[in-house]
Figure (cartoon, helix red, strand yellow):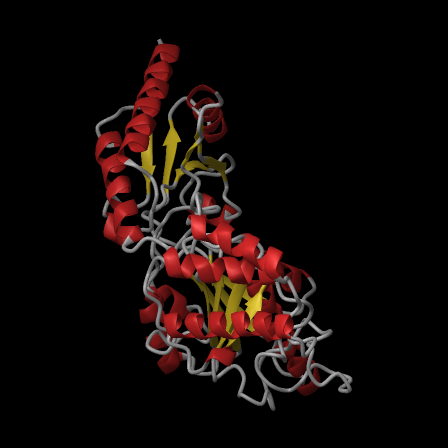
Length: 407
């Protein structure tokens, strides 16, 4: 019999999912997997109702002004590309028309490549200026450092809600509050890929203008689905003078005679056939996900930190206080690379973890971990005490082997 994988890579993609997720997807495929908004038959109308329900639930979760401000995308990367390029390309055109200074962006060194790469592309073309804000030795960004990096021409501030590489939770609410006072024209973009479904998010109270998230991590939904909240300062309901460009055009199932996307939310930003499999799966996940999942995961991380703190040959990256982090724990070893350690955990102990730079090279550079990065261990809501025991035992054996090899 094949040994069951001990899965500690939930920060990449959560697994297992609630069993109701697969059941909902199977039922949708069997009972009528129609496209929404394209027809008047009952199956199409039913598909549209799934989208409306999901949009309403997501809007309530983040305290959005209305459900139409929740744009459905194909994942956090898609959402972040839409936000970064949508805002900056609109401002770049304004710059060229008015012969004003180039748009300026502030972003933290912790950002995922989903933020870094679109920004870097525009900077390489000479179309924007960028200031990258550093983090402290524990992996936290200081509010004043972000604010002091802004200028009169700053159009966008991008900040992770929590680092996928370090687990550190950033002071987004404080940044949002002070940003409105210091640089009121700038928009705040928050990457909530690691926190949507894990931490409470209130876009109005936190002064977030754009919030990007995905379904397949803490919300326990399928891959290939995400969302982008678009606030009132970014775009009015009629999309009459948006500060963001829609970078997706195509079929919307509505107003087909129009040569352009309809000037209304959410159709202005959405095009193409939605990921209905992801949508029905996420609806099931939101209904059946375990409660207080992060509390359970933090208990596991606290146990790992307590155990490993007494060990030689391994270092814990980031804060020891689990209330300041998500359930992503990164480690570095004295004599093994992260890749070697992950390989041993996989081949010898059937434990799945994630080594490397985690698509966030700036975070690892800031912590002095480049070029190899770190080994990330991320439990999930279904992780058991027995599985944690096995991980601790495996790490102890690896550290013992490291000690022997040093003799």
